[in-house]
Amino acid sequence: MEENTIGYYRRELERAAWRERYYQRKKAAREIAWSDSGRENEQADPGEFEAECAMREYLELIPFDNGRKVMRALYAEGKTEAAAAAELRISQQGVSKWKRKSLEHLRRTLDL
Image (cartoon, rainbow, N blue to C red; front, top):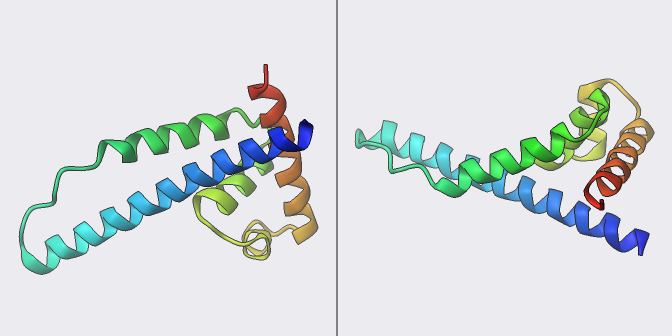
């Protein structure tokens, strides 16, 4: 049961991060297209705002500063554990520990 719950929240975070990256790529493509062609940007997708808000809400539930940084790097920015470790100047094992600890906290918090 516990592993299923952790898996569920992990998938939810990954989905939210994927949506955020997808909308950021779309936004960047529109900006490039606009600057190249001189036409106005298209309307912003309302799902972009919702995905960003959902991701922020999940991250704000994590009480550990390092945990939030690790989760943002791994899920929102799509970095590997090694890349996140190098950026945060901690070991890869530290990144793994903070990820596990943060996911466990989210599971307990959201499982009410």
